[in-house]
Image (cartoon, each protein chain N blue to C red):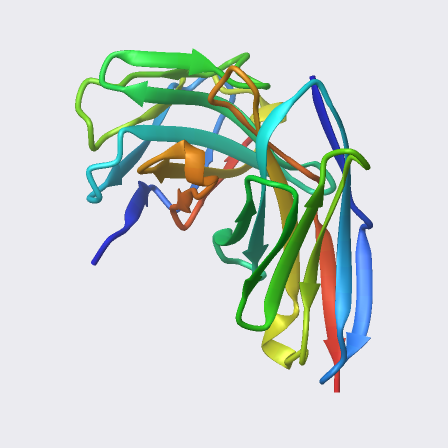
Length: 113
Length: 110
């Protein structure tokens, strides 16, 4: 089954404790991206990657890091989480961004205390 | 930059037709996409308008007019399962980042 898989789905952590949210897709998509969703703000792009070792900032990259060492994986790293990073995070991938079609993972709800 | 606006909420009855608008201020984009998101779920792709005009996919249609900086999603023969949030999105011209609107929550009443 074609899918985008995120882990963990739910996480409660404390300020400053480094964490990684993993994202893996099995569709051989070159494009992958991360979003955060907050009430009333829609989805805001954090980082995206056009291919292995090619990443770029989205609209809200502060406080986040990403890496793309393999085509299928695109982890999101919070080096020193803060309460304002409490949010619902989605990973998405696309075969061709020209189609405007993104495939989303099920989301990861992160709470930073 | 890109800025998309949508109504925050829309309510309609089962069997009716509803239009969800998306207006934008943007320096340029490739096309307008629409996504549906049920509570607790992931966004799922509905449609894409790369060119001006109407695109039809079953009960859903989407329209884009670049000259009017305006697009909409049209849902016909509404069903209870259509109750969800709907987001418009654009991919910025010259880049690969996607910008989403704030979303419209559609409530379908019996």
